[in-house]
Length: 115
Length: 109
Image (cartoon, rainbow over all chains, first blue to last red):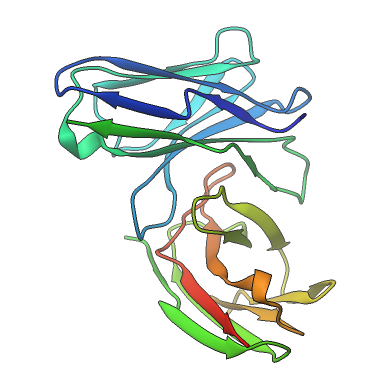
C-alpha cells in the first residue's frame, strides 16, 4: 500500500499524559498536513510542512501541540498534558504541491480518546 | 472571519441527480475543493476548481463562481455507495483548506 499511513490507529490515554502520533506520507509528496476532526465536523487544519520546514500553524494550535518532520519524510505530532477536549480523530494528509492541483491524500487517522 | 454554508443533510433516490451547494466567505481564496468522506473513513478528493466554470469527472461535476463566492457539486446517476458526507473546502491560503461541517448525503432505493 503506497498511501498515507498513520500510527497508531487508536490511542486511549489519561488526562495529563503526553501522546505522540506518526504519519508516513506518500513518498514523493513534499507537502504534509495535520488536521483534527471531531464528530459531525469537518477536518480542522492544524499545521503544514513543506519538506522539513513547518510553514504554517493554526492559531487554534495551543502550545501543548508540537509537530516535526525532521528529514522531510515522516512527521510526528505530539500533544503534551492531554485534556479531554483533545479527544478527536487526528488526520494526516500529503500532497505533491503541483501548481493548479492541491489534491490532498488523507491517511486513515489516529483516534485519540482522553479519559 | 471565515464562514462556509452548505446544507447539513440531503436525501435522494438511487439513479437520481443531486446538487450540493456551497457558499463561502474567506479572507483569501485560491480555489474550491470537494471531498467525500464515508463514515469511519478518511476524506477523499473529488475535484478542485481554481477558475470559474464547470469541471466534470465521471458522474461528478463541480462548479465555481468566484464573483458569487459560490460553488456546487453535482452527482449524477446516484448509487447507494454515494451515501457519505461531502465537504466543500475553499483553499484560503497557498496551503490551507477550510472545511465546513459538510453535507450528509443519504441515497435511498
